Image 1: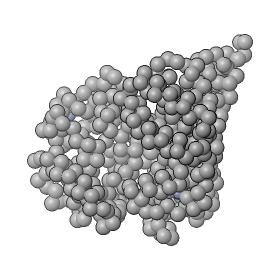
Image 2 (image 1 turned 135 degrees about the vertical axis):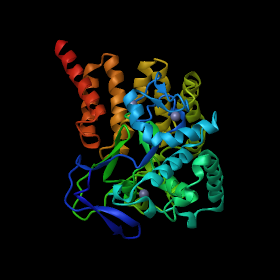
Image 3 (image 1 turned 60 degrees about the vertical axis):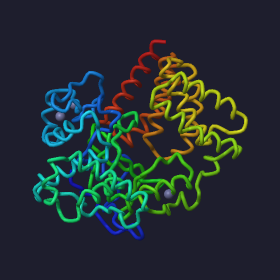
Image 4 (image 1 turned 60 degrees about the horizontal axis):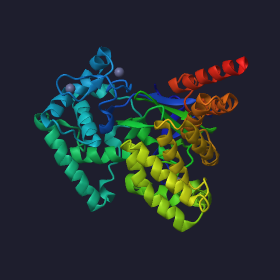
Length: 428
Ligand SMILES: [Zn+2]
Ligand SMILES: [Zn+2]
Ligand SMILES: [Zn+2]
């Protein structure tokens, strides 16, 4: 889709940016595009179609590299052009699979080498992306050099024509560009399944209270407004999880994107007091315990995760309130474990506790709150609490009309659930 209501401009103190030409309403689609290049995250290679991002346990695999998976012959055919040269690289390295950034950069290189000048109609090209190599710490540069060595081994004989790459786009600067310009491609549950480069969207600057949100359907990215945007106003997205106090957000942004966030929320330390409510010594030790629990979650050790998270919830019950973001993260982990172990009553209890804080922190329409409401709604529905479920689905739907639009598969799912609740309520 060509951009008709936006233009590129130089944003004061931030470099390139995008602004509105006309007034834009919440829920309006501003831009929609397919990635220039993308790849599936390593952990999801076995269960995700490499063309349409459909999930499944029984996808068919590429007979040559045995790594790429597809949900249909049609998807496999469609993906072949992007996969052809990568397939040879994967075969050579077997059984090793390089990290996501290496595989993504290889795909970018193949695309750049095969591309004619005429297929570029982007607002912003890869050549213009910043690499930030000049401000990068020696330690980070060392990491990039290491990745670069892996990339060259991975490319192997496909390596020979790297000299034909556009000037300035050598492998190391491409790796650097990818770390600060690509986006995680997430599914309806906001699980990150892959990474992609959407060159025009890299122009968007960050704000901790953005006026736009990015939503994916498969690997297609759609940018929507979540607030009223006036003509000439800058469009912003959030590069980082907003469920974090300003100091944490700022240091993450500095580390990955090399800038100090000066947004209104950071400057005012907005909601930091709520996010860090409770006894400091208690929440710091809780915060330090979270990475271990997240590890248990990613390894799907549900029994252990539930036991440990319940012990922590009990220990801190009287000294840290639920609106403290570390308790909030803990509630989400405990809820996940409960759902996986079929403890639906307890899962709902944790879900209900999380909803208040979610409302506090996501005052603008936000996919995270919609997904939380949907999860709680499904539990209420399953447990026969129809009125409550109807309320949760209605709230989720109202947010998703804005963040996802009425055509999105997830909005349709909520709409279907809402219909079921209504029908069942009618029968009672
Ligand atoms: Zn597919
Ligand atoms: Zn293959
Ligand atoms: Zn900020």
